[in-house]
Length: 482
Picture 1 (cartoon, rainbow, N blue to C red):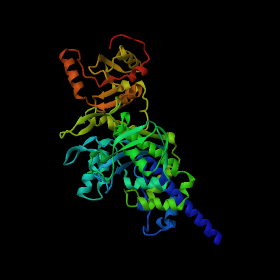
Picture 2 (cartoon, rainbow, N blue to C red):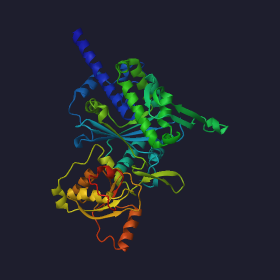
Picture 3 (cartoon, one colour):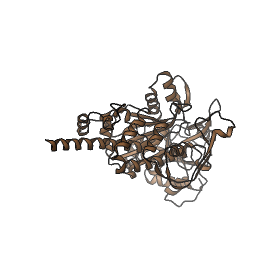
Picture 4 (tube, rainbow, N blue to C red):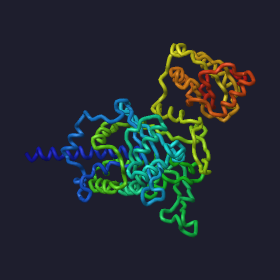
């Protein structure tokens, strides 16, 4: 009898540690541990075992194979991950970090898409606002509703369902890193930020006392919670590190470092550390994930390998989907380069890989036409690409030069608005181009000028503006004009 009890107790403890390991995987996704709120059953207790729900209930959930997650039926689960300053910071509920973690259960893949806080989106009843303000607006009107409101806004932006959300503040993140004894992070570029704000010194004099010099050398660095948070939040670094986009990449570095530390046996099997982490984050997390869903997520993610984690950042680089701008109040904003969110939505919906190839019979059935414009200074590029596409079964009706020559990556402007998806998918697959529905104003003006000059007699189904990357994909050596 006593032996059977010991076996049951060991099995129960094994289940508990299994669940905690899954929570660690979630921390990998957005450097957050966010399940303490739903795991704690008696916050006042000092025993770490008392902070775990009833063992028999956990065992039942862990061994159940009938629990399905939202999105599992479509083989894609989308989780919104939010980071906020919290009550001790200015703009407590402004989302400093916005990231969508998408899980593809069958292929055991995870994709992370970082959304910059300065991206402007339409907010019902408020016009166009920065996306980081949605959580704050909702919390002011109805405390506790920020996560759901931001989920709805991001779902509309990306045209994908958001199944769950997690929100954590900086205090919880910093404490967790310290409880782990710090993390080891490989720094790609030396970081110098001479204007990193000092908490609590916002109104200090002299003015220079409000800021500190944050310096992190290139190479492998050991970081405590304070330094890890600064490394993840810095946005005024010298050179290439001085942007939100570089910051998003640094956050991914923190994720990898936390993964390594949390999955080490020394951490996972230290009850005191587990207890302290749960206690630290209990007041710093909000989520709509239930305990049964956490267990199911563990089963789906436990075997995900590092090489199957995809990282994407929406940015304003030459190949990026965003451009800089100014709002009506003069504030810095980011807007879609295509004039709408179609390219961003295309990326979000196809983040796990290339569009499947189609044969030429699909193209013949749709009878799609393509106009090619050279968006580079590379002579003959449009002609070479036209030959390649015609060999693949496309009907190229015109080639021309674009007035804009700064394209790094090609763009397909779909004038059918999705009516010839097989042709669009094949064209994207063969060119590697981004996709936009409709035309930006500069291209509308260019087409109008061509029509006036009698150069454009028929509206094509697609306008392909070539970027420099197309030169590497072209197989012909033609060096004629265009």
